Picture 1 (spheres, rainbow, N blue to C red):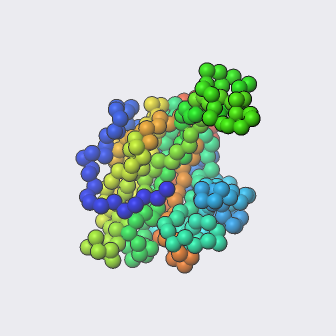
Picture 2: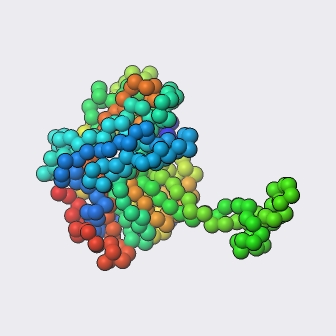
Picture 3: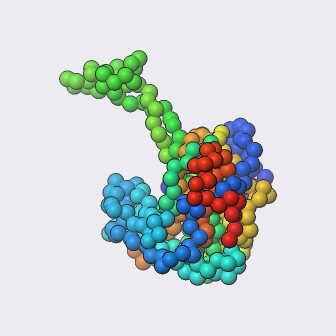
Length: 347
């Protein structure tokens, strides 16, 4: 799902609070042990991405098109839901990046959406950091530095251009038709199924694992759009308890930004962003929410969206990612610190 262009100024005084009650105290992204096996500083080896086209488009046409793409260092993979960006290339780190960083990852897309089909609508691709599921009781967080190019290098379109997302899991209750022999059918009502065998089923509430994808999007406001008198960008947050986006800070100068999300045992998501590449602090907190009214149980991965107008010829804005990292601040200390470095939040 893509975000429509927001109108009006950001209501910054309102975005730091959760819409449905108190959340646990701040948990600053980057706190705790950095999981080196689930992070990538992009400095080692000869990096290459193997695309395995045609890309996946399961969200649009239920076609996975496996095997999905992956990187030579096995730390990145194609998103099976929407497919991988068309260009995933290691580049020299732009000026102003993390001290000592030589290389970063540049990503952009042209043929988003369903392979071989042009929709003339906003579409997106997904690049996933290869991690493993982590219970939120371990207080995980994820951080990445993102380079925003000069305004004249952006796709000339007001709207969403890039996303920094998390893949979360929770448990919901959902109605399902079950055979009467299934123990979960006990106490269920008669199924609405007709036909000869309809009486052999009951409708009952069953537990279901539900994925959801909160995050922050970078939205461009083009001066060629009559609504804006100059080029700028805005951070928008997905989302509140109803899934609505929340307006965040305006970005008036391109360059490096640091983004992070953290997840606390109460199931809340905490959003942080700051200009530059310094470690995030409590002052960089934007909002804490229970997106869609869900309480997270598992953090699965961090991923990135490239977004463009799917016209078969226009490239998306190229964004540069550096040092995406996953941290644990709690939980089983032996497991959490396996392959980790304590408090290594910067190179």
